[in-house]
Image (cartoon, rainbow, N blue to C red; front, top):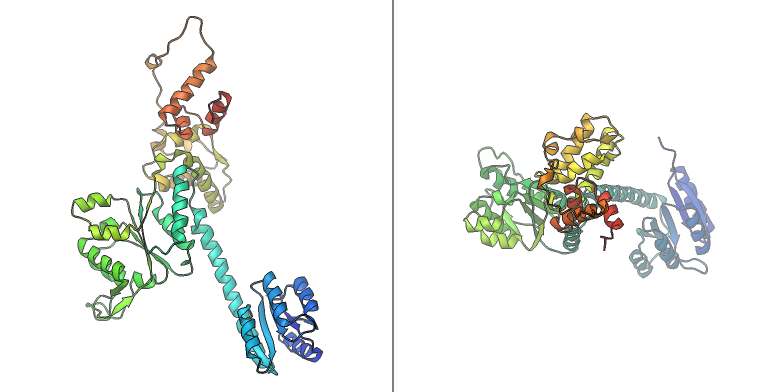
Length: 460
């Protein structure tokens, strides 16, 4: 059991009141301090950092309101209980506006103020716990959970930041399977002012249509044979927060109609119900399908499409941002080092080259699984080429028949470095300037090709 005592400071120029309060709070397990003036009180406050301050308004030289302003300047979490003379309502209201937790009129009963302190301490503890949870959620699901330094990802970050600061009620996220659509959806939620409300995710392809409607909108008791009691749907459970509809392209036309009505009216009816229920939910729809093609084929409603795409986020596949492959690898190595108590420091150069040469059809999800696979099965301090799955090993650059390389070799010859420089230039041209892709084509690391580019004056 902790021996820590909550610190309580009493600032009152009436010595008897301060002494009496201090003694009674000490009996209840508090560590108390007293001060007879605003200046002395602020000095004790800065030195001891008390959790609770009893502050009288009528103090010599510096008023209680002035002291309260300075306390709030230094701390927003300190519980300040303002003490006023009976009938000083205006002063009490001003104190509350400045951040006092509550006020009491003199004279007062100890039991009354002790009850206020207990409630305030509990509320502060709860606020601190909520703040701690928010920090953990932000760390796990906020912007820091989206890894990448490529120009494509920088553009994605910019879009997400704009969404989080907006009131956009619907967002549409496109991306191949494994590109991180749910990761982006969570970041939008936890970086927005909806973070204290629920984040609810549902996969539209995972449930049959008959169950999906009741899952989304809930049902009333007796709506069908097994409906023994009312059940709230995902829209209600996400009230004030965010609802992710993953695989939105799998919805039937009938469900699309019902979803469109809910989005347009911001209301819905439970299955078997007659009353409209209002909702305040940000809906994020995600899909790996081409919805415009689905519209042309009659499988997706155009009006729903336009309602969903108020803001669109297009996530690039991993093969289009190869400069992020090694960054992501490092991130997942560190993640699984912590999870499995391993000490892997990175990938050796052949493994790095193989990772860069691979097309990653499963995108970031596949890369994460590859790193996890390697750390689970191997005990080396490096992930080596032989530790990688066979599909990645099969993508190693093929050996080139020397006779297939067209090289006009002069009789006088020329330096080997010129051939190396020419190879780098051609690789960069083929890769449209992408250094990571050019490095993969030449079976070297990005650091190596940057070193060579600098050496040959090829860097801007």
